[in-house]
Image 1 (tube, rainbow, N blue to C red):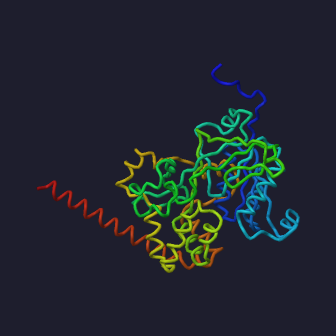
Image 2: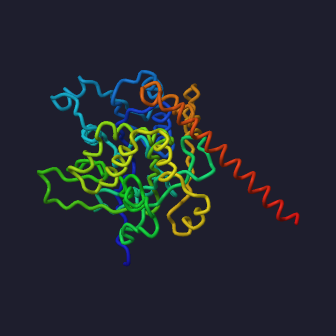
Length: 378
């Protein structure tokens, strides 16, 4: 027989875990999206108390909320809250992994939305029993020139380049130093991990604990799904993270331990050189996050730009929460101003720069139309 028989005892029930500190509308959208995809459990660890968000999530039966208070960290680790966010994520993912009774558990961030061609349970059910984890490859959201963002989930998606393309300077030009395999974030996927085994969930893939390191760990990539990474839910959201990292020396965390993240360090170092100029930050965003409209067709042909649609607004409506959730760019930016003093200071200037650019582009388009009409009348 060409193919080995399917696992007759396979189970496909699954859940997802996330540690986050984000505005209410994003977390509710994230939870609703995964419930709509069929998650039996959506485990959310809130990095700080968020009473309004907690009350909304309590209305969703599949959602399990843990508020990570100082008491929680003392009970979980017998020590204070860890400073490094990735460590907090790993601890919480492992707590969920130990506790769940489901067959598979995914560890995703609040800006990562799964998109699949077929039901997720079908993908998991089809896996051979020898597979311990499956990786969902990322697609990184970008914007298209001349198409202002209205919703949090607008845009197109960049596919990471194959490893054998190298840095491809002939394709990316000056932006190359800020990229890894053609994306600004991570080019490697994130995982669904089979539960009930000696494994520790990771940020991207699981590992064996020290006591079971000799036990082989098998995983491979999923072919019918991808993880949509909204790295920066809005333009200012993306830029503000770099601005804050530049002001606090955040580039060091990407260089002292993991050379693979040096492209992130270069983004932050470049922002530092701009002396925290919001105009320059806006220019950097336009250079790195906006796809020139005249390049769009070529990039689609090269399979570097793809289109995917998700509808978290529909998924929220299906939950019947009885509360309107505004998923517009403007509402999200406004929500961030309530929690971040710097963001509140930057937002008016960012809006001014954006409107000025839109007006200039509109004027250019009108001039172009007039020139075309004049030529046609000759």
